[in-house]
Length: 120
Image (cartoon, rainbow, N blue to C red; front, side, top):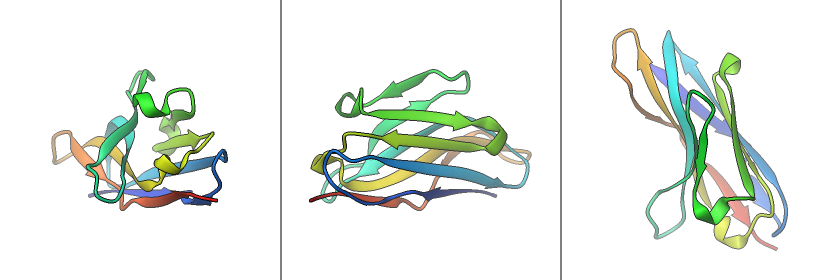
């Protein structure tokens, strides 16, 4: 079993910054793509940013130039640096990873979510 644990959410004023972290833990596993999704009240969950094994990334148009995704393979972790935050960035942010283990093929895992609220 693999677990993803997020941290770093909170309340921030418009224009401020936050950094989200997500660490994977569990029995022997291999991480592939990692990413961040978000879900605002009444809306569908959407991709925010994704980072592939080789380090390439893609971002939702709404966050390009403001958010930066990175990963530390030695720590089995992915990060999301969020800057110039806007009220419309308010959502629950979920860590996502494609993971395989010794007994399972590559499949999607999700964290429990962390609330980000942008408000004055």
